Image (cartoon, rainbow, N blue to C red):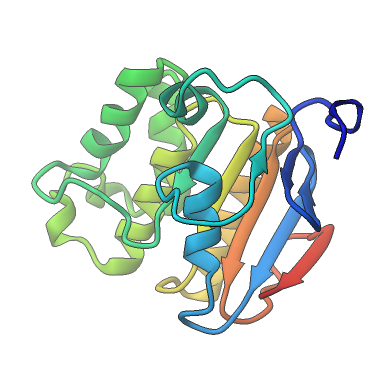
Length: 196
């Protein structure tokens, strides 16, 4: 691919996959078939792959890329268990200064029972933790939001609430969305479904 074929902030995975900002993608595969690895390659937390990833923009450091361009809801959530739900969200926002206190509170209130906000994360159900981690991922600017099996522990009603929250933030930022799943999910209006 020539330099002239790289435009804007699209992510090119050579030779055949192009993720474009402003579009929604679902990556489907069975367990152990590379969904998490693909997101880790894009995020830069795993560099053990052949080929190249072209971000279509200068990348001075992986830290700047993660701070300003990519946000990631990890499958293992990476929450601090002794901190409360709101403290976990604020921790990220203290680094980015992207959301106001009122915005963070409103996002949590939309997807979590009010009394859970001030409880240590270790006391929350896995589905509640998953929702807290998702809100934390929304507390930064991004060109792409990476969600690794984001609804695996959430019932359909709460998954829809979370999907609505995610869509609003993705659309507000004009960002791309890349979601992995074991099977097709109908919570987003995906532009493309990829099968690994």
